[in-house]
Structures are given as C-alpha cells and as structure tokens.
Image 1: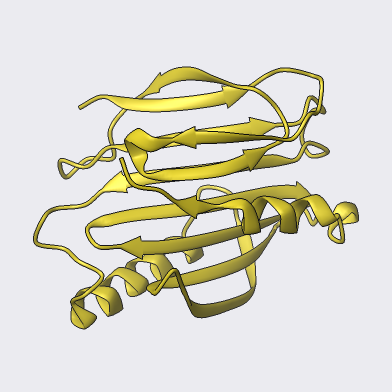
Image 2 (image 1 turned 180 degrees about the vertical axis):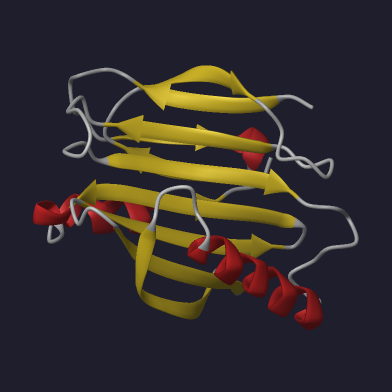
Length: 170
C-alpha cells in the first residue's frame, strides 16, 4: 500500500490555506509542505500525513500535522458501537506510544456533526506537549496533531491551526 507524507522544510513562516481535495479537507499551515512516501499501517490500512514543521530542532520545534486514513467500508461514524470501539483503540494507543507520555486531558466532542476525541499529552521529558484531535467522518479518520514546546503553550497559532481544518467535497 502507498502512503503519502507531506513534510514542510521551508524556513520562512507564512500561513497559507492548503486544499487537499483528494483527502476531502482544507487546512491552514505556516510552512510549505512537500511530498514524501511512507509505509502502510498494516491490516490493509494506509495513512496520509500532511505536516508543517518549524525549522528549530527538537524539542523546540512546532509541528502541525493532519493524518488521513480510509477505513474499511463496514466502519462508519454512523454506527455508535463502532465509534465506541474506535475511541477505545485511541485510548489504548494514547497510553502506549513509543514516546512515553502523560495524558493531561481527554474529551469527546462533535465537529461538523461527526464524533471526535481529543487528547492533550505531555512528553516524559516535560519539554513538549502534543494535542491529538481525531474526527471520524463516515468511513474516514482525520487526526489533527500539534506538537509544541511546553513554554509555547499559549501560542495563538495553535488555535488557528485547529480551527482552520475544514471538510471539503471533490
């Protein structure tokens, strides 16, 4: 399976709207993305990632990502038992990441009429925060992922990224 990874490496910050009609979304990002190929998730699923990353080195960079996964046709956000199962998998993954994290908060929400779940996590070294916001749209999963230095937690650009995400139709 083919996976698309877009990675931003431009050092000049200029917020622009990027349309990804192939994946049915639009989002504002601060750095120009470029295309990279990645491997599949297993179980017949692949993901596509659009990432815009500041030029600073870890742990001082800020990363803005959108992951998109086409789920099996039998899986749907209109099936409440599937949504609960999907959220349980997210809960388990949030606790067992490769990078040790502490879950600071989690909440369920609805966006565009679809179910979602958000996690705010702190990396074990205390230097970075990760906000992961999942939205289940019919048989598609979107994950907005924001990683930033702990000392930049009140940056208004973080909210700008999250609020800029929009679903679009082909």
